[in-house]
Image 1 (cartoon, one colour):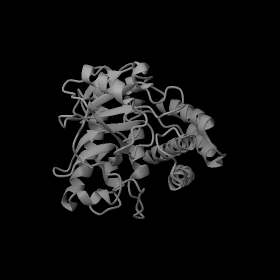
Image 2 (cartoon, one colour):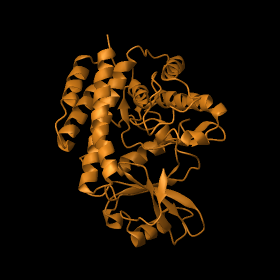
Image 3 (cartoon, one colour):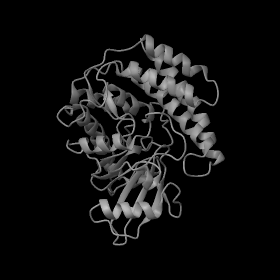
Image 4 (cartoon, one colour):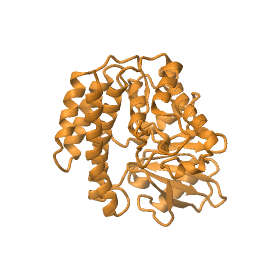
Length: 347
């Protein structure tokens, strides 16, 4: 991710500064707010204090959003709870639910040093000899997340425990109806196929919903995940959904990977290897992983369309770049096609 240094739309400088001084230990005004460019949903700002101390502030996108989306209090609750496990997350520092401060709720968390590996080019910052180890740690962190006792860490009532895929199909079908800018028959066909071939849910776990290298900060010197980010889609559900989601991004047997994933660079584990490692770590049956790849591709297509629609409305805190708009328009179509292809691989 990159910083847009002079862009502060979405921040009421004076009111947020006063709130930080009053509520965040060690926060020293005046503050500089830099939009972290790269996220496509909630807006994320690097906050730099007068003493050089840095924090991260998260708020919803500007403008109208779908009901239940972009809930800052919920996201803050999740990272606070996960912070009590072995899963590395930024430490939560404070939550503001008073809309008079910044026109929307926001929360503040610690800044974690490292690199977001969100492209093959970024992989160059991770030594070749550490890429296999980093792949292993990424999947081990996921296994740890899925093994967390949701009741023990206070997330037992976060969502319904059963019927995760059914709920998700309903939710994202509704979101498609509310966000779509055109008709795409593949979206409807995949939704129907997913409903017919529902697998048995293997227990209940925290489901991150967007787990991949691009949503982690990596310590490129140690070859480890330093922090898992972007918990807005997190819920309780089927752990294999996160494993399938990795399959949408991870480089395939053809050597092709998504532009915002590093694994098409040399040295990373193959997707088959990470699936095997996950199965060994958790003991779960992964034989139907293609179903979850299909589900995740379909869901991501709906999310992509939602981002595309928000850009068209000017709700993302920056002027829409025609190339970015085209990337999301075409990306929705490509993901829908990938979902259909994965469904056809199922026996």
